[in-house]
Image (cartoon, rainbow, N blue to C red):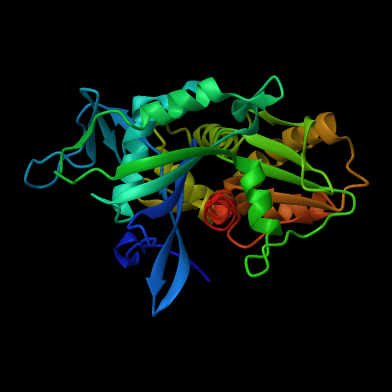
Length: 349
């Protein structure tokens, strides 16, 4: 059973393994951090998901009413403020983000929010396809940088204990989504796809295309990544809103709301921007279509094209109308996290 948490105050307590550790996966993306872990709810083990915006700004920016730093983490001596409404978030759309101090602060913040403060965890995180592989092999040197970075000294200004990472494994993101879609947990068997499965994972900053063969191996030559994601939609939408209403200073959280609702509050009044949202979405879908054609052609002989990630939540209707074999699972933004957690729990150990 899956439980998607909308408010963190309702998050159930994590459930330990027999050895006292906790398995947890953090999909540390360029727009949002998604988390998957096991919890006991009414005597039953359930999969729990929630997400937090992955936004942080250097320095001590936010304080509570008592003047205490809020959402501040010190990593290797440098301060970072984590929060949905930070006004000047750092740019994290690069490969180096995966082993940066800011990523360490964001991952630790997500784990603490989920209730893992002071607990021993077996952590999993993900990478875009092209960052995970190099020259057709797993890029072990790059992955080592990532695991070492999350072992950096990190201190919370609130006094919260840091999670204790006893092991950390890194997974290719879109491949993890294929596991979530294909694995029968009860039998341990995978669905078969006579002519293969294509997974298109549109996240905040990148889009992965992973081609899965009928025997569930990866066609590494036809798979790949491109810097195209929800950030592109938000950037285009911001430009359209700025031009139409002659305003400036739109925050990331305001753009998030505009994408969800089709409206934005300007001078205290809600303004409908559904037409602008559709224009921003259409441009990104066209770019994605070009990427798909370059990678796998017209995909006429592929059984299923699985769309996951935050982009699938926003562009579901566009994907289904454009691609005949398109499937968008429920809660597509959590497919990478869930697939990796399934793998960590039912296959790897």
